[in-house]
Length: 238
Image 1 (cartoon, rainbow, N blue to C red):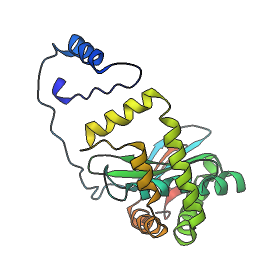
Image 2 (image 1 turned 90 degrees about the horizontal axis):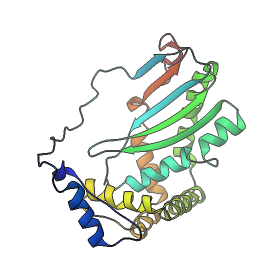
Image 3 (image 1 turned 120 degrees about the vertical axis):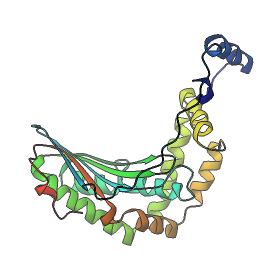
Image 4 (image 1 turned 45 degrees about the horizontal axis):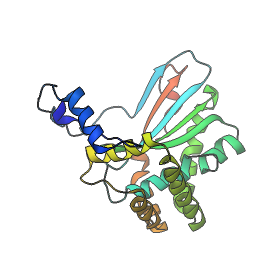
């Protein structure tokens, strides 16, 4: 509905042309009130391990921790945390689980950010026989990371995050998404330079503090898809 739409356009086009097209194609849409926002519900006593039994040759595993909502002051520290742990072929998890131990076909981490909640997920695809040891090694690497992450790693993560962002902005679709997404869910639209500055301000103490807060075993959940009849393979990991 028009009252719940943000139109973001980037590229070689004038503002007047966009406005004319918007009125031509959307101007007669019926008005209405957006649906109310529903706040997150506490997990309570719901199971922390979820299994989807499937006769597959590969197991798909997700180890997920509650993270931060959009706009949180520590969101850039959390972003760097995910980047150093599991984003890219130089990340700790990729080097340890795939390159060194050959336990997985793929391993990576990613952040999901919502209005009042977030999640940091570590995904691994592996042989089902390696499912338990894979998650055990992930847990070990997280523990090591929180103890011995270095300034050198942090600086590498900052360069990667800034470079990835700046490269993405060469695509006009990404520019439109950057502006539209912030306009839709935040109170301001930050420039790339402003975000890079905030990334640069993250310290090693920030990284350890945020990591220690988010990566708590008792808050984690596991989701697994593969030839598992029940959750017995994963008992005791979290």
